[in-house]
Image (cartoon, rainbow, N blue to C red; front, top):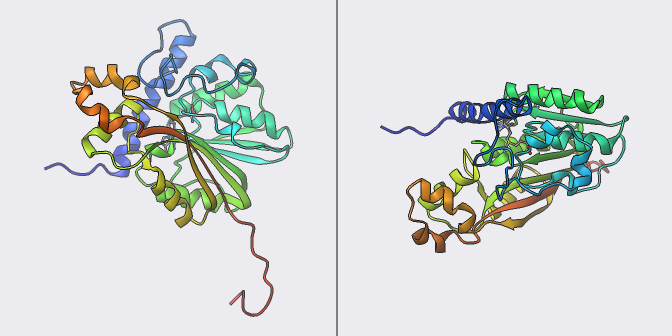
Length: 288
Ligand SMILES: C[S@@+](CC[C@H](N)C(=O)[O-])C[C@H]1O[C@@H](n2cnc3c(N)ncnc32)[C@H](O)[C@@H]1O
């Protein structure tokens, strides 16, 4: 009898996949082997490539750029101010943490949170190479963020929330650790509208979603349920069947039959939201 994957099964699968990718990035930088493959190392694949400007990547360690596995550039979604505290959920090799650290400056702080030891080791090496003293990589899961309430100005994340089997917990935790007025600026893979379950699963395997991408209106609904306001989900890179053709054909899928159900339905999106400022207590009624 088939049983549903538990959160711990999914965490194990994610750790195994991203641990192997971190090891491959390190091997390749030591000249031992090449690093290329679906959703690994951004070797021209349509999801992870061309996300950052040359000006951004030229100031970063090569391994931080090589380990970039995102599907957008969350640091470009908003203005970061000197002195702010930023948290990157699922920080991988650390590219978005290092970019954020440059922008919040020495009086600010950029945290990366990841549960995969090999990725944390790679990120810490990249931090050292970058000489970034206002950065800290934390070990933990995005479903239980190891930071106090109201301690972060901005939450970023790049192609990670789709990997979680408990998105409600992730969004609740994000809301908890944000300060009042804090912002959520995330890049993620989403599904647009109804897609048959088998077609959806095939596309998600191509994109690298382990637990499943959220449908765009569902994403907005979950953010509001977690307490966020000013919610926006903006698809910006919409994938075509041709992007996935090679992968799907290799998996024995009839790509032409699937095409009409997929075109325009899987996208990378920018997801923005805000935690409202705390309401001031103005009288006997409003604090009751
Ligand atoms: C697709 S990679 C993205 C890495 C990075 N954000 C980037 O743009 O390069 C996903 C990363 O999230 C981490 N991750 C996935 N699920 C996680 C979870 N539930 N808790 C903590 N880290 C997680 C993985 O270990 C991996 O490093």
